Image 1 (cartoon, rainbow, N blue to C red):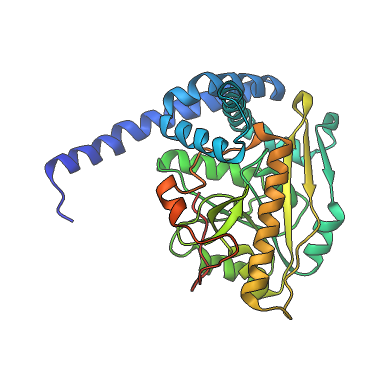
Image 2 (image 1 turned 120 degrees about the horizontal axis):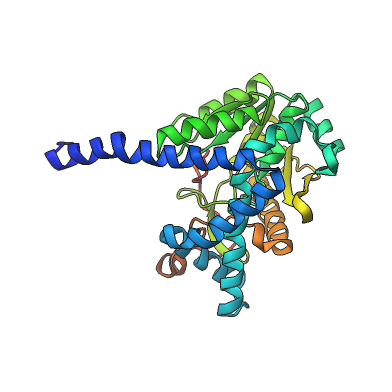
Length: 331
C-alpha cells in the first residue's frame, strides 16, 4: 500500500488528536458516573444514550431499525421508534454501571441486587473440567461470564477490540477487574486457535454469538435466514464439553437476574453436521425467546440479516452450506 501525504496526515490526526480526545471524554464520563450511586448512574447513563445515541451513531440507528423490522414486523412505526429508544436507553444503563460491577459481583447479596438461577447447571458443567458459556447481546451481556469468574471458575472470554486503542485498554481493564482477572481473547485471525487452546487446557470459555458471521451458515433467526456462527457447537463436539446458555436481565429498581440455562450437549453418535446444526438452532431459538420477553434489552446495533438483495439469494432454511473451518463471530 502506498501511503499518500493525505493518508499520513489523517493517520496522525486520528492517533494524536481524535483518539486522545475520545478517550478523555470517555474517561471523564465514566469517572463522573463512578462517583454517583449505582442506581443513579444507571438512570443518568440511560438518559444520555436515549437522547444522543441515534443522533451520534446513525449507522447503528439504521441497523437497529432494520433488525427490529425483521424480528418484530407487526410493530407500527411509533411502536418501533419507542422500542428503539428503549434499546438506546438500555445501552447507556449497561455502560454507566461498569465501574460499579466489581463490588456488586463480589457481594451479590448486597441489597438483593443480584439473583442467580441455574447455579446447578454452571456447577455441573465446571466439574466436567471444560465448558462453553454462551450468550447474546442481551441484558447485561457480560455479567454472566464475570459472575462465573468471581465464583472462582477459570474463565476466558472472547471480545471485540475497540477501534480506539486508548478506550480499548480502559475497557479491557474494567472487564478484567469485573471478572477476577479472567483472560481475554481479542477477535481476529488467531482467535479460534486460542479458544481451542483454552478448552484444551481446561476451564470455561465465554463467548457472545448472536451477531452476523460473514462465512457462517444460513440458519433461521426469527424465521429469516441469517449467517450464523456454528463455532460453539463445533468446539463442543471437538472437545466433548457442554454448552451452558447464560443471560443476565435487568429488573426493576436496578436489580439483575443471572440465569445459567440447561446445558446443550453434543451427541457423538449423530452425523457431525446434523448435530452442529441442531445445537446452533437450539441456541438461536433460545436467544429469540429471551429477546421476545425483553425486546428493550436486545442490543441490536449491528446488521443481523442480509439486505433484501442478499436475502433473496440465500438458500432455503434448513439447507446448510459446508463450513470448512470454525468461524469466529463478527461483533
